[in-house]
Length: 273
Image (cartoon, rainbow, N blue to C red):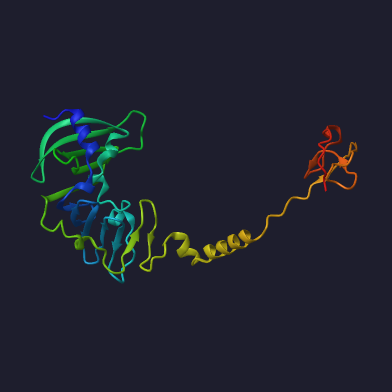
């Protein structure tokens, strides 16, 4: 039976970008066919009449959906910055904010696994209670069940897992279909098919705000910054002219606001205009 340090090591080393496997993913909202290949390649096809397809070609994450249907929400397709089903393939979140307990060996998807529970640390009320089956070889989760205050929130699991499937080595299987939207890097908004960035502000303002901002920046870049006009207030006395000056000046503290006569500083020797 695996001990806790061994399970922690499995979760820590889990890396989907090195995997080669195919599986069926079962969500609360449906099912999807998943194919993963080394180098950060994956393709997941949601099994529905108007289902979306999402993936990563090794450089960019992308999403495609049939023409005519509304844009899928992140919750619907489980978008995770170009990663496939992060709750299963990126299980490192269980190492932060949870206390792990080993329940024992189990079999999931026909593979050897270790059943664990993850309980929120004392004082943390925002984490859900998690029960999971950790793959004893790969470290990914084969099943994850989340509950909060006794209520079931979500169940996500893999079925029919095949390691090193024949289709994985073909890079063409991960190429984005025409009209796909891309994500250049984690956290960036998806771009439109023509390459322009698509975000809420662009859609709401039609790009007008961005264009106006660009013009203001361009004008500002070509204009020489004006020097503030400084005036001397409350002169203290008349100074001898500096070597480079041709007339007498009044010495005082230069300020952009009226100085207090009671605190007018000593002469600085600089000419104020």
